[in-house]
Amino acid sequence: MQPLAKAALRRAALTERKLLSESELAMRSEQLCAQLFQHFPVAEWRWLHVFLPLLKQNEPDTWLIISRIWAERLPVRLAAPVVQPDGIFLNHYELTAHTPLLLNRWGISEPAPDLATEVRPAQLDAVLVPLLACDQQGQRVGYGGGFYDRFLAQCRPGAVFIGLSMLEEAPVPALADVLPTDVPLHALITPGGVWNF
Image 1 (cartoon, rainbow, N blue to C red):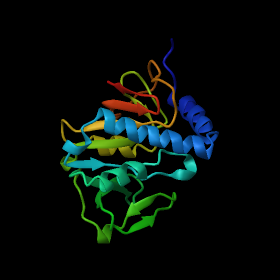
Image 2 (image 1 turned 90 degrees about the vertical axis):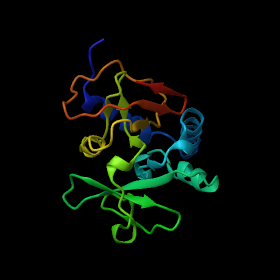
Image 3 (image 1 turned 180 degrees about the vertical axis):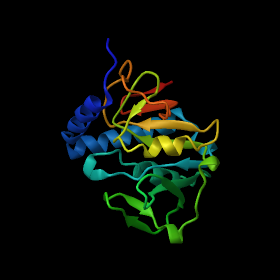
Image 4 (image 1 turned 60 degrees about the vertical axis):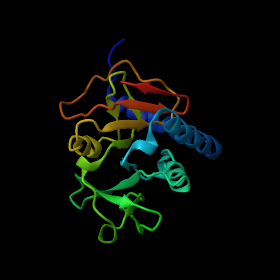
């Protein structure tokens, strides 16, 4: 099978995700949360980086994961990203139940930088990564901005990168246009299962 182009996969995934009903979105987010806690040692991590969902794009509702960590009083601390004014890089801040949140220009909630503690990428044990598609080598298709590749390249060796997909599809065999700066995932969680790379 021929390797697939990221742009085509991105378009197809966005279209498919937009067709999901509210009830289907809620069920799939719950399944992703359950898969994470079933297959990964969440309570053993010191720091988990979690993206806050862009719900209008039908992204996974990561608040289910965050709420469970807080409800079960797990010792893992949470960090969330803030897009920098240059529109290129992310900074990261601790997320607690008391962290004030602001909406950025895309409608994504972010910790208020002036009122939260900055977290360095080298501190992180695991990162939950948004994506639209993924191949069998762990190379992912995102929105195309490169935010996460630049960020993941700053993380320490041994940090675990876990993609969250709202779609049921297994990883495609290969992507045609992987760049030298692309950082592969270690695992992918879909509503129906987990792939390790």
